[in-house]
Picture 1 (cartoon, rainbow, N blue to C red):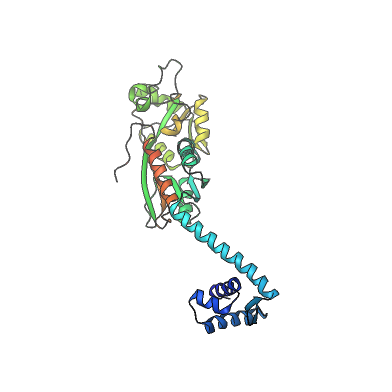
Picture 2: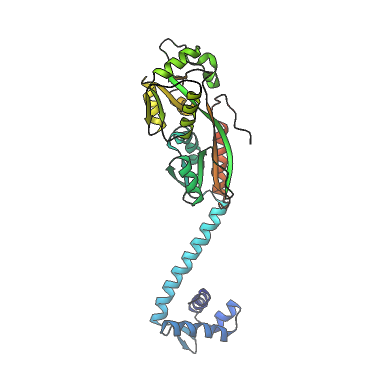
Length: 320
């Protein structure tokens, strides 16, 4: 059964005449008659009762017309939906990012999206950067926010903002009020100004870190190269637990600066400016073949705009 046959059949039913339908469709009547005959043979039923005044539907014809109307209504809705995707802010998207990254970034992004594009449906997928990247490649995630991704020929990568994995401790009780903005990461705002004191604090420990994060392993190696070997290591599953323990004064924490700051600005201070850091770059990734709909462009622009408004932490993105 072909759509053209159903379209011809509907026109005959609408006009009640083979001749009138052929004229309206711009077809020869034998072509129309052959199409109806093929339908009747395929369905094994008589669809039209021909008579001198034209053609009328049989019971089988009435049933087919009902289903044909539903089919063409569905096609019309599909066409309208596709047109809407191209021109309106509609659609469903999956946004992927690490939980800790999302905890400080998404509260800035989502109010804008929900207010300005209420017809866009968003789902969130929280996973480590490597898993988000793989999900984007597998088309399970449309837009991913990842840290330090490796280039891939199938992906578009848009640098967003910088971060750095650093050493933090709870601010001393006698510490002056925390300055605003990037000044909190300046040497004068660190917990101690004495490098030997910082090393002693590290060696005494415990040093709290997210064991599965590569940047933490890099910092532990750099500490060892400088002769700093913490006596007690406390490996956690994620940065949120690391941060909670640091806020409780349990020990020194390895944290990205933005994670250390959000919600508790000034409560955690860099331990010392001479301690090593690992620069991070947060990047928007999506497949090069992501449909170029208005909604997709809106989301990419909203992410970029939110990124430009992120607080300064005294670092710049890595040169590319």
